[in-house]
Amino acid sequence: VPELAYQNGKILPISEAMVSVEDRGYQFADAVYEVIMGSQGRPFALQKHLNRLHRSMSALDFPELSLDLVKEGILKVNEASEIPDSVIYLQVSRGNQVRSHLPEREMNPVLTITVRRADETPVRPLSPGVSAITVPDERWGRCDIKTVQLLPNAMAKTRAEKNGASDAIFLGPENVVREATSSNVFIVKDGVFYTHPLTPNILPGITREIFIQSQAKAGHEVVEEIFSVERLLGADEVFLTGTITRVLPITKVDDIPIGTGRPGPGAAAFLELLIEEIRTQK
Ligand code: PMP
Image (cartoon, rainbow, N blue to C red; front, side, top):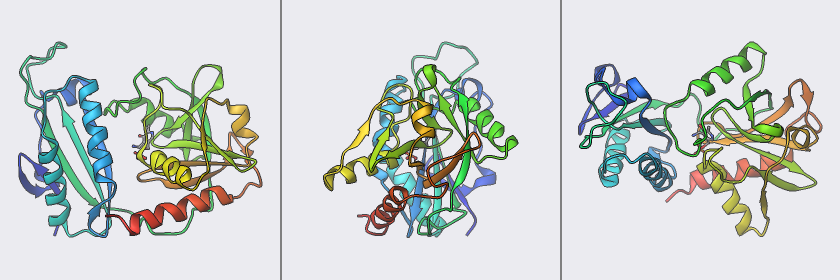
């Protein structure tokens, strides 16, 4: 079975799935997306992804699209692929029209889904740690909406690679630590976890949410507050969280070692918890 796409209710090879050159996603980045991890043949945290998709579409005043239909499409194409550990990408654009900044009143959203084999199984040990650079956040003011407008993210990631680093961390005014190019940022200091609060400047990450909720259940509070790059550099641990990233220790930032320079117990504990959630997903 090849890696598959889903389009207009049909399943087909990815190379045969096409969108129009007048798709507003293509011309204006007028589209939203989700990346979902398939594990043991099932999409992990599917309802949370559907809820966030709905939130993104509402925030941009997209025409209605049945979430039941989206869900059905995801399950159908992922199942048809027979890939146990998959990466499910789904995109919804506002629709097709003759190019004009102003969207037409009645539009039909365009849904496409692809399923590919994941590079690695989500059930694998913690990374020995990677380095990151910091970059000024040049993105727009609604980073809480998951749009495909990812050029600043792609450029920051390219800058990281040129500097021999794995990722870039976006800094807001006054060197506030926001998030990385495709994941959220956590720091640990004296046993306490900190992360940026939910504002229009970061994506409400699902992995971030799973971690905060599980900590709360165990009686540990994750402090959601603004902190600067100085606090990050002085932290005991820094790690990233995301669907594809899982939990990734950052052991060096702008060439400065973090803590011991090795992954810490906070990241390890979270990974264990996340793997347990993936294994026992309902
Ligand atoms: N921030 C950004 C900018 C992202 O692109 C992602 C990946 N979707 C995340 C954070 C992490 O979100 P999630 O845990 O839902 O994958």
